[in-house]
Image 1 (tube, rainbow, N blue to C red):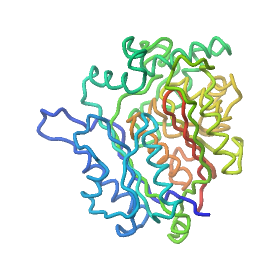
Image 2 (image 1 turned 135 degrees about the vertical axis):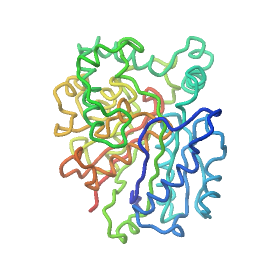
Image 3 (image 1 turned 135 degrees about the horizontal axis):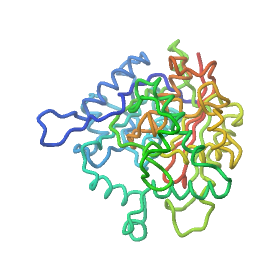
Length: 396
């Protein structure tokens, strides 16, 4: 049975790269990606001639170059008999790129594949960005006229969670404090200055009860992974990260809809997580760390509970007690998470994979989880109506 592995990674720090079209000097997406491809291939010690598949996260609509994957195949001069394609799935976009690159390995179409993504949105006006986001993340007839955005959903989740389980604002805010402490140790993070609980609680509300430090910032970023067969990884003699299990589930509902459900039970994450654990032959208690796609503090809590990292209704209390910090029972989002590492949305899942690869290869420096052997990546489509989960294993 063939298995896929991560052998090389590269990423740029999350920050503002995109400039207004009127400015004389521009950051060009394909040049940024090309540099990362070279760096990731050097990290993996693979030759250009070995690459046989390219899977690209579809860029944001603000990227002028369309059909980006085939353009990159040309720019890199990379002929491929495996696939050259782009993936699209809102927040899951880059996770699907990783997943489909792994498929090329599993199907035997490639021994080496590239998965990469770039996200540029920082110089786009708030109005244009919001217009695109509202139409992409909701029902244009039901959600869009009222201006409902993902943060609105998550704010409702937070209110319901506090009502159901007696969780406090301070407990939810502790997730943001923890993430910033992790981000302070991550050179790729967008925001690295430590923050206190009082500072989080004092921030202006974005959508009540979530304040400024509890929601994701806008950000530009790019990342690249070199994915290889297990045999190729072993032959390299380098530390690598094996994809040990994978699970996906879609509820058959579009974001928040008229279909009744338990809004604070992320069924998709529960099911995808169960499938990934079964494929890996482990349980959540075997994990050493997790990188969760969690745009807001409440999402990290709910996704963590759905994935078995904390009992239902106790995720916020666990975060406040320090269980999800570095050195805690199960460190979550050691990269700093979306609230502090940053959220270049169509590239975000690859940043999570980069963090797990660094941790599982023992290269995370001051934020290293001691003796990390098993890590989990979870990515969502929208309010976790769909989830894609991977279990990764260190091989040194």
